[in-house]
Image 1 (cartoon, one colour):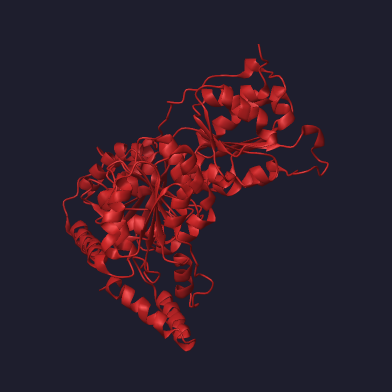
Image 2 (tube, rainbow, N blue to C red):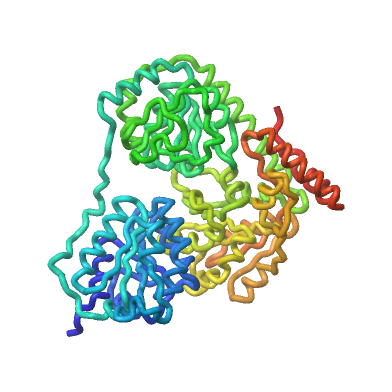
Length: 580
């Protein structure tokens, strides 16, 4: 009978914790663990082409399923490549355990080939990072890592030298099982609840602003909004959970927001923040009283001043409030915000339809068409930048769809590898990666992972030949865009050369048929859509300094002999400018 190694023990502990996939690139220091994965039923090694993609994929699986996912990197450069994807998983509150293989234990500290110090550089993107130097350490270190990742919703790292992984296992008596279905709830004390009730009852105009922390609490939030006649806005990561079947919804705030959320937050006299760590303080109001409800106490008050911080789960807090708060009867504020919201969203939808025959192709039309054709339980992954803008504004949730991206870490190149993790986790669901051309090109090698595993991801590239969001940021700051243009290949031809169906769309008349064909095709598909590089994203509230910066940049372009570019930008966006 073959000996049970440390690597076997590690894999078996992961299996007990619910891990089903380990994403990574094989390498010598990982050989004992990779072989243990091969020999154990219930866990699969997913071979990606770059470790960063593996970390993104693991984070996506964890976000979507709620269960622990795993990734691995070989010693030195291999595990260093994990770091950006792990930052994203950690900041997205995705439970991920990462295995960082290490050089032979006898060589640590000698400047050996590929030597690095993972226990130092993973500290900032994990809750736990420890080296296993003896077999007896492995069970406790790994189980602590798992509990940290699951308990804190984040990353934990186990550093394991390859020679230690191949030793006979020890300390089996320390292994234990996990109650993975446990999900404790926490509500505020009666005294705090009573203080919150008094503030709500005293307010004439209440707005609810929701984040990821309201997941699972849709019905309770809608019921509270109905009782208070309160408009409901949300941050991007709250959209999936409250923006459907909600007659009180008024859109999203932030740099890529839309609708009447900004006005609802600023014109109320009590703003209730539910489960959100919304980062953009410049969009937070200063006049209304503000209450924040969050299960993570350290987040209370770190984005705005607070009149009351409530430590508790958002859903349980709302559930406790419902029988306590008095029902309001004045609809004036709610009706005003809803009228404003429906007007703004109606313009956005109308615009996306009206530009359907414009050349170059408008990205809004592409996103709206994807929303129309996509499955009711589709998973959308979106690249940071303009792809996130179009998805946030035009992809509609319904309680079954999911929309994920690098919404906190803000990394480029996330959509494709996150789609890999989504499709591996849900092989029977439709997965659509909305990629920017810059983001796709950055981790383009992992397009081959779709081919290798036959993953039926539909990759839609918004090919505007530009780092569009960066160009916009330059314009708003008063700089003419510089070094943002991209010279791209024919991505569809590239896909075809790799053996994947490629569709290139240059004519707006082909958008609907091209996307319909892509979504109906079995297996992976790449759709290369040539979109207008001059399409702009207007924030929900434009400030004077932004207008001045934009005007200054336009003037600089004209003086530099780029008047044609200014005219093209005006033509592309005139009808999309906000109106009074």
